[in-house]
Image 1 (spheres, rainbow over the protein chains, first blue to last red):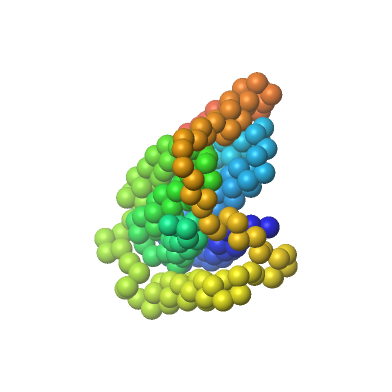
Image 2 (tube, chains in turn brown, orange):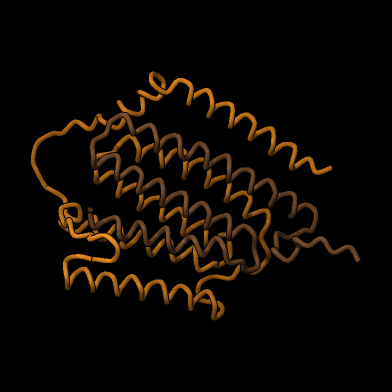
Length: 98
Length: 174
């Protein structure tokens, strides 16, 4: 297995807890989600280019399509939170009504 | 020049550590753009000219612009950068130290055996040849999307259309 996959899998492993751990902003977790998708795209492209499987070049094109859908839904919910509360902080996501 | 691919992959991980240590979203977006550029250069080193261009245009030119505008909208007055505060700087330093450890490991042992044995050094180095090469495999394969993957185009297009409608409904609120 080629050694370059070490660093790209490390990039995925670094972004994954980044997306799961919340600091103050919600958009930071969305950025780490984009990082996960970017590392998946890179390793997908490198594997397909390495084994010269020409037909599988479709996959690195379809993957950002669905990633864009996911990112826009996340951004839309962020925008609605920001419109309601003024800032996109994570502790605004509470349903306490007392 | 022989180790350019190794250096680029190390820079990629450093960029990922940069936005995963959660500074303010503007600096996170900057680190993601830098990581995207470095990733595109890695793809270009493998002869994927078309897929590198796809990533530049659609990923950096489309999605990062949207992220930049949204971050500018949902941000506060004094954004925290990597040097302000102990948590962000500590996470950034830990990630960098781990990457330095890996570089020393690879330079010493020439292979990494964790679950599988990653020891094929043939892809760290670039074969420098002479003459003109024609990189066409990836653009031809992407063109097959409209031939063998007709139904996939229809499904992806419908997904995007429904996604736009969902976004409009979410931001409408009530």
